[in-house]
Each structure stands twice: as structure tokens, then as C-alpha cells.
Image 1 (tube, rainbow, N blue to C red):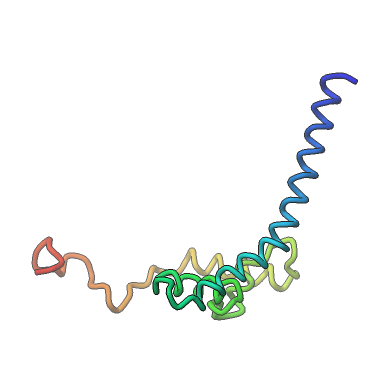
Image 2 (cartoon, helix red, strand yellow; image 1 turned 120 degrees about the horizontal axis):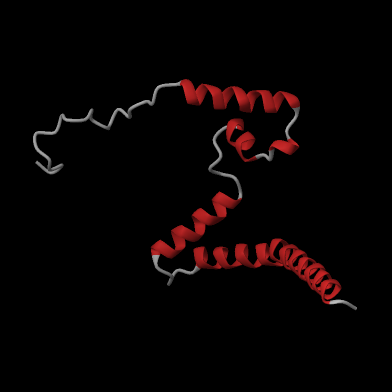
Length: 120
């Protein structure tokens, strides 16, 4: 066996080991993470910030913060999109590049503060 063949075998072994690890993280790891977050939410002695962060993690993983179908398309891999979905994604991207930036109603226009201090 040559050094080059041994290197190839090591690389292949590493790829298989990584693939097994990723599968385990997605199955067993996901379950343990969920159960840990749930336990933190239910622990009345845990600090509120820990409990709320755990609750947010559960809701986020469950997709509760997705607001529209647009969000789902943004996360979808283009290789998995239909032709119509790809056309929509391209149209949205072009529109966002051409649209002027919108200013929030709560954000004052520049140079309207009396001084350089926001607390004046």
C-alpha cells in the first residue's frame, strides 16, 4: 500500500465518521437538546432568562417564528425549488435590489437631533 492510498483510505474513513456523527447529532442530539430545553422551561428554580431562552429555542426550532411562505422559500435550497419557486426568488431578489431603503417610523431622519447626544 502506498502513502497516497493510505491517505485516501484515511480521508474516506474521516468522511464516513463525520457522516455518522452528523446523523447522530440530528437524531439523538436533537432529542436531547429538546428535552434539555423543556426541562429548563419547567424548572421553577432556573433563572427567568434561562427559561425564556429555552422556550424561545423550542419555539424557533418548531417554526413558530416563520411568518410567511416567503420565509420558507428563503430557507429552501435552490436545488430543491421548482421552476416557479426559482422565478419567485429571482423576482424578489431583483425587487429588493431596486427598492429604496425604507426608514422605520420610529427612526428619525438624520440630523434632526438637537445635539449629538441621543439623551438631550
